[in-house]
Image (cartoon, rainbow, N blue to C red; front, top):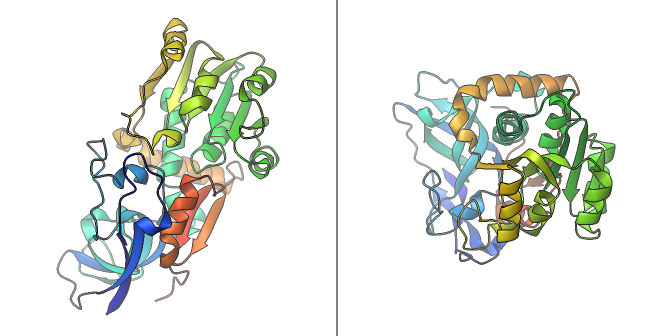
Amino acid sequence: MIVQRVVLNSRPGKNGHPVAENFRVEEVNLPDCVNEGQVQVRTLYLSVDPYMRCRMNEDTGSDYITPWQLSQVVDGGGVGIIEESKHTNFTKGDFVTSFYWPWQTKVILDGNILEKVDPQLVDGHLSYFLGAIGMPGLTSLIGVQEKGHITAGSNQTMVVSGAAGACGSLAGQIGHLLGCSRVVGICGTPEKCLFLTSELGFDAAINYKEENVAEQLHKLCPAGVDVYFDNVGGDISDTVISQMNQNSHIILCGQISQYNKDVPYPPPLPPAIEAIQKERNITRERFLVLNYKDKFEFGILQLSQWFKEGKLKIKETMVNGLENMGAAFQSMMTGGNIGKQIVCISGDTSL
C-alpha cells in the first residue's frame, strides 16, 4: 500500500526562522503485514506545536526531546483510528493517540506507544485530544495549579502572554475558574484581542504590536501582577515582570520569541529584570508537564467536565491535508493561529 509521509527536508539553523520548505512530502510503501504487538492506524489529526522548533535543530538543547533527522519521517502528537490490530489492548475501530505519531497518512505502530481515547469526553471532537483535552490543556491546567499559587477570593491578577494560542487561550480561562479576579491577555492582532474578551472571558487584552505594553499593563492591572503565564519570553516578559508584585509567580510554559535563537532554556533574564525578580521574590521555575504524569488522568477529566459545562471554550485553527503540514507549522510559529493549530489528515472516522 502506498501512503504519504512528511520528512524533514532541511534545518533552518539554530538562529533561523522555519519555513514550509523545511519539510517535504513523499510516498512510501506501507508493509502488508502487521506483527504481534503492532497495529495499523489511519491518521485523522496531527498537531503542530512550538516545542517542535527545538526538534528541527541537530541538538534540541533538552534531554527529553529528540531531534528530527534529515530525510526521516517527522513525528509529534496525533490521533487516529485502528484499522487492524495484533495488540491485546486494541481492537479495530478504536480511537487512539500518541505523542510520537509519525506525520504519515497510515502507519504501522507498536501498540505500546498508543493510548485509547474516549470520543464521549470531547463530544466527538477527536482533534480536541491534541489540544484542550490533551497535552496543551494539561500543560495549562497543571501549570496554573502547580506554579500559579492561585487562592480564590484573594483578588489576584493574572497576565497571559501568547494569550490567543493553544495554551494561553486555556490558561486565562483556567485562571478565572481557579479563582483569579482579573485576567489580562497579551496577543498580536485586534481580532485576537476581541476573541479573548468577547468569547473567552478575559477581562482585557493588549495588542503588543500596536499598543505600549508597559502603559497598558499599568492601566489594566492597577494592583500589579500576581501570576504571569509566560508563553513568549523576550521583551514582553521583561515588561510584565517589571510590574509584578512581591512574592508573585511566573508559570514558565514557553518562550516562543526565543526559539529561533541559540540560547539556553529557559533563556536568562536581562540583569535589570533578574534584579527585580530576586528583589521581589518572584518565582520563575522551569515547568515540564511530563513531570506530573500522576495528575494526567484527573486533569483530562476536569478539562472535559469544564468543556461539557460550557465553562471552557475551545478554539482551533484547522488546516486540511498532509501536504500542508509545513505551512501550518510556519504559520503557528508566526502567530497565524487562534487557539490550537491542527492539521486534518482524514475526517472520515468510518472503517
